[in-house]
Image 1 (cartoon, rainbow, N blue to C red):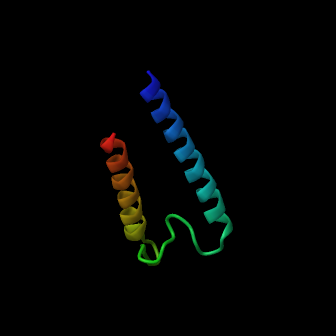
Image 2: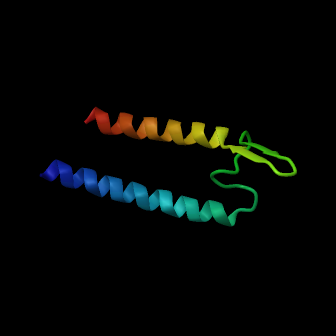
Amino acid sequence: MLEIGRILIFVGLLLFVMGVVLLLMDKIPGWGLGRLPGDILIERENFKLYFPFATSLLVSAFLSFLFWLLGKG
C-alpha cells in the first residue's frame, strides 16, 4: 500500500504542475499547446482543417517518458 500511495502522490503532483503550465501557456500570446509551430492549419471559404502535428509529437514524447519512468520501478 505504501508504494501505491507514493505513485498517487507523484501523479497528483504531476497533474498539478501540468495544470499550472497550461494556465501559464495561455497567458503568453501566440504560444500554447495546440498552437505550436508545426501544427497544420488550412482555411478556405467553407472549409477548415486543423492537424496539431507538433503538439501530437510533444504529447507523445512526454507520455512515453512518463510511462518509461513509471515502468522502471
